[in-house]
Image (tube, rainbow, N blue to C red):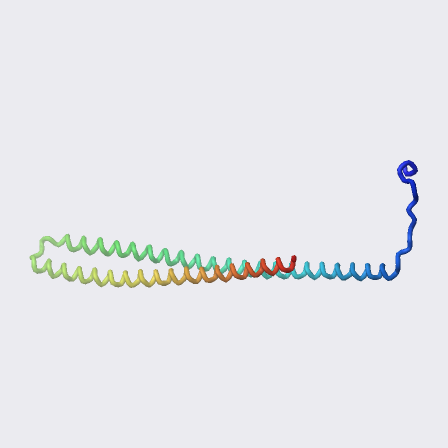
Length: 161
């Protein structure tokens, strides 16, 4: 088959030693470059992984705090609703008392209800303030993460280029 398709013989030629030495040095340089790039990639991906893990832990903490605040808000609302029902029910049940005593009791009940509502409103405002603060902190963390991620992607694109 060789005789049929190969009409001439390929002769081995000696390679110039300078060219071969340059080839070897270029190959070593490229191998070192590839190994360094692999090390940098591994290091950067480990840093990126640690950042993601830290951000996820922070998010979990914030979510737990938000859920705790939501439970607190729910409990405050339920206690406020229960207080309103008990106060009004107690006032209405006193129909057999003389009129001036009922009015006096009514005023005391209303004052107590107003004081309780002020406390509840204060607690609600405080909880809402905490909730808004947590949301703002979460937004800041997410913005920081996005900036770091964009920088990370940009650096890797520059390295690839």
